Image (cartoon, rainbow, N blue to C red; front, side, top):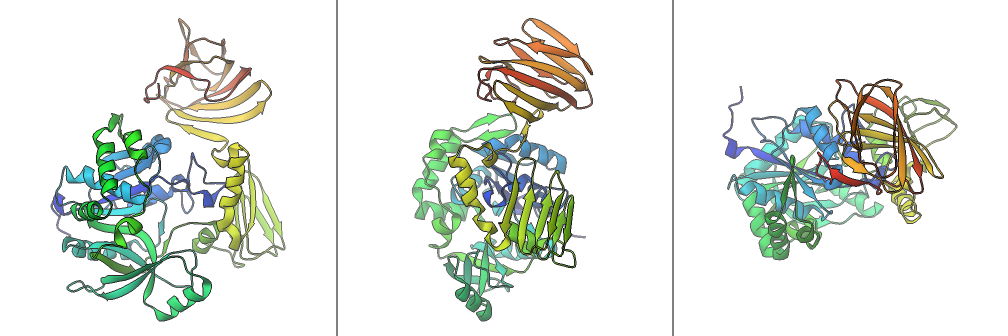
Length: 480
């Protein structure tokens, strides 16, 4: 039996969940990015990441650094996984990994001067958790001896989509760890083939393990303005329910920089632990194809899919039949509102499509038809001139804000469950097949007092139906 380590010797996972993952559009979108999606199992990539660091003998409770827009979805996925984090720190804007790690270091040093941080993205896949844990323990020993450790993935193909790290001399006293000779940008094909043949280059995983104080000291020496900005953002941070909301002005003023650029490429304390652990950054549909189970023809078939004479393709259906005949090397992804088709080797270029959608003001760039809120979800069924129809689901105990609209009226019809409605000075209870009307300008609130989800149809009518036509007077979730 493994002896329980003292709390101060355990490693604190710092899970970074601020990205938008546009390369996996149309499933991954700004308001529901890839780390929150169940791409490889019934659980999201974030939930799988949490389970990898669940060994209480080795790891302390995690600290999550997240995008403010995703806070309630992340909190719900943590609840589903049974994980109680040390904190969920909310970034008002993305500033890359160096400031995020600095914020985490400052938070944890206040409680534990000897804190070790494991900085890891929330959207990676690791097929061999035993190899992952062995590498963590090796890196932790090196970190306790004063190293800033990065993990290099043993290359098994000439990959041009990853940065590389060249292995240096063996790190004295730590068998399996090395000095870092160089960090290298994404290479061309010929260079990647040479790296594979030479055997002393590994892929840069973007995962780090280091003492919080050592990282802070090196960042202070190399990028003092980043540390100053993080201290200011943390000093003026506000508690909001279960979240720690960083000060927007102070954090926005920080220069965005990665841990590699800010520290690792310039420090004399960088160390490398190479590891083969079935790692992928799940950075494209092609990458997802490579790590997913396939049929005898090399096809990944997910959802309602029927193929004939097709090979080496990725098919994913969300709601409708995908039928393919005589195709090869494609990525085909269907969602409620988008059908995406690409040559598999061009799948990394999907960000060009997303950029065009954003320029043209298309909602498909950022949101799905089903939008998640802390109280439940809503799904747009029809959006026309002066009328919009939505299917609303309110979780048991869910409570929308007390609000009003300047430009629209609303009709609510209960499909199932029980609705408690505040309408002006009235409070009413509605059950299945009952309805109510909310006139324009009327204060109103919707609540589910029951034990099952409340489903209702909302019909909006008026001159303007945008989501920003909401005046909140009271809100359980801190949005008023």
